[in-house]
Image (cartoon, rainbow, N blue to C red; front, side, top):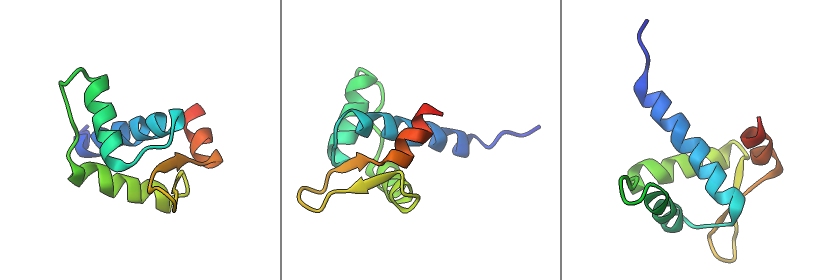
Length: 84
């Protein structure tokens, strides 16, 4: 049985982003910095992986970008997914 590691990696990124914005609203750069800090500098995701995922999460209604400052916040639907 073959595992599609690219999808598994994105699934981790998806959950990690939801957990980060659940704590407080952040913009993309702040999210990447939080990931680098949490991993103690071991890994910092690239904008090419974070921003498409933010768009996907937004399109799915799991996060919402605030107009006033461009920060993403988790929606009730996103909280349900994290709790699940």
